[in-house]
Image (cartoon, rainbow, N blue to C red; front, top):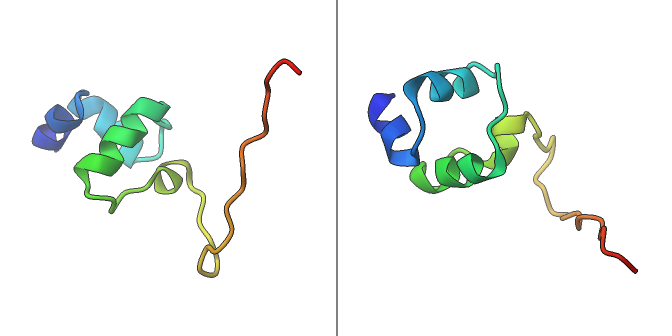
Length: 67
C-alpha cells in the first residue's frame, strides 16, 4: 500500500481511509488512482456508484455558466 500511495502522491493513511470507505478522495486524487491502477479502480468505485446492468448511458454535467 505504501508504494501505491507514493505513486499517486498521497499518504498510506489516506489510501487506507479511501480503501475502507471512510473518505472520498478529491477529484485529482481519483484521477491519479484511476491512472495508477490502469483503470481497474474507477471514480465510481471510489464513491460507491455502480450500474446494476452494463452502463450504456452517460449523463452530462449541468452547465452552471453565466447565461
